[in-house]
Image (cartoon, rainbow, N blue to C red; front, top):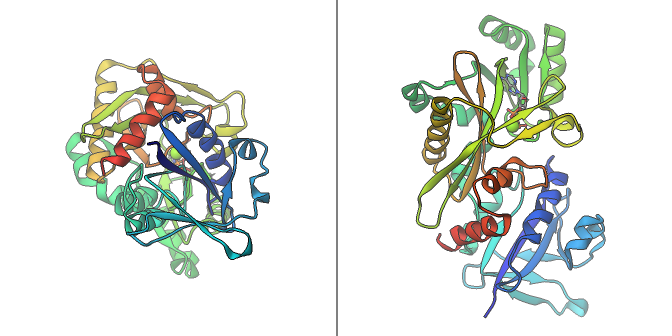
Length: 354
Ligand SMILES: Nc1ncnc2c1ncn2[C@@H]1O[C@H](COP(=O)(O)OP(=O)(O)O)[C@@H](O)[C@H]1O
Ligand SMILES: [Mg+2]
């Protein structure tokens, strides 16, 4: 008997569009001889809709679906409740969930809490690891001790919640006493560079912070790290063995890897198996696995670093990295000989092993 995979995509997140692109790649590579695939799209407003076919994601018509599909929290049912006409609802049994969701409400532990309650196996990190990895401040706090032990740095930073910003002068002084311009201003919880700016002056700092509040109620201001941007894909197999890919590099023609550079700029380059000394590659691979393990990660993550003239600097970890056609995570594994269908199968296996 075929098992049923529920793919959830979209999401009430600033990374909604990226999730839809990622989902197309995931769905196309699920073995349909082995699995029934059910698609549920979450709109930006948080509505759950049954999506009949992948083509509706490709042509962005899935929003027109009027069939609600709700994942039930009941651990005995393990089901999706699908709305029918005349109030005749159906229950679809779900064997495993692949939440192809990035950012808030999808990669931050919220939806993982629902999966836990429903006791349905799922791909990706659990509640706490997702929440910590999503929050750039907590990630830094959790990783600090053992990164120091490994000789790996993190950018110096300060952080505020919006309540503290009521005393703006104090906050600015706090930043300027600790960091020098230019600084990076980021929402603590976001992704795909949403709400991130580089501030070269006090005026830009204030502007950047006010922009970041639109995305999150907590911000982080970091010193600028000048160096190469390197990424490592981590995969934890169904037996719990954590593996790291070779190192990829992103090169951008604009000042930093912002949303446009990531998804719209043809000059931005993604290089798998970049040129790197064997020693630095090994340091980064080891660090990527250690960070994943320390956070209690599950299934997969992409861990991002800077390499300066002197140091390896940890930047961030993504527990549901992009899966779009130009995304680093699947490409790094392809370069290691793991095809996309095989990668998706392996990820589903990790879900089942929960
Ligand atoms: N401290 C920093 N120094 C230099 N560049 C940075 C720094 N922080 C972020 N950037 C640039 O901004 C991009 C997005 O920041 P990142 O922390 O990765 O957030 P996101 O979660 O949105 O990807 C990075 O890929 C990098 O180009
Ligand atoms: Mg990033």
